[in-house]
Length: 282
Image 1: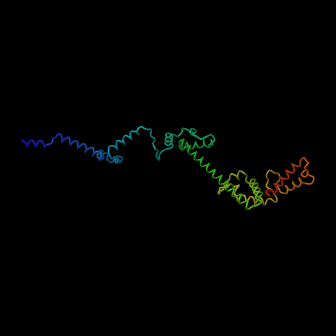
Image 2: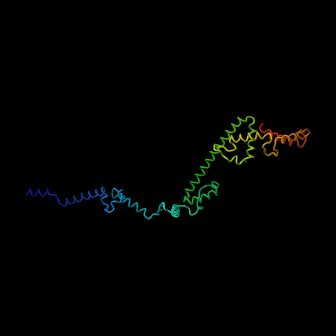
Image 3: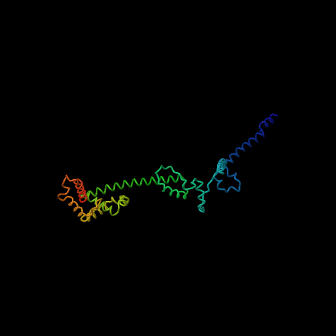
């Protein structure tokens, strides 16, 4: 009896064993599912490359939910190499391109940009499919670049002008004022002030400030000075004419010599101007 009792106590409860086996089996199954997600994929889908990136069911579920959120959203198809202009227009419109070129609106202040230039720019911006913020950024970049270039150009021109003046002063000496004025007058009457001031050479100097140009016109003016004076506002054209007029105004008995004469001051002033024109800079 004692042996039977002992044997019965040693024997385990089948129910307990079954439960334990099932518990182990469940735990083992979960581990298998997590560690071998590819084994759960049906045979006909195992070759799908997109499924090879999933390590477990959690990754797969996250991807599925994310895809579901995208479904139904307003999507824009990307045109391929066979797309037509109409295809691209549809894309630009969906991205936010204004309906018409004149519908572009900017935050520039009054007078900050040229209206005619903006009108032409809007036409091209619309054809290119630019969004309003892109168009404004391009205009601002262009303005900043031009402003910077203009400042640099003015600084360079001023630097070259000063260098030219210093070089000419050393070369011309006491004749600097006269020769420079003659050169400027001859250059202006030949090429025009606008051309001299608005034409820039490769070294950054204005044509009218370039030392070689100034010297060339000065030398030419010197050769002409014996017969012709480069005119300013005066009606006289030659040195002989000037000398003749000065002699006439200062002849003995003229108002030039009589302080009491009503035209004395006017005559003296005229003679002074003529002499300045004749001997400018000396």
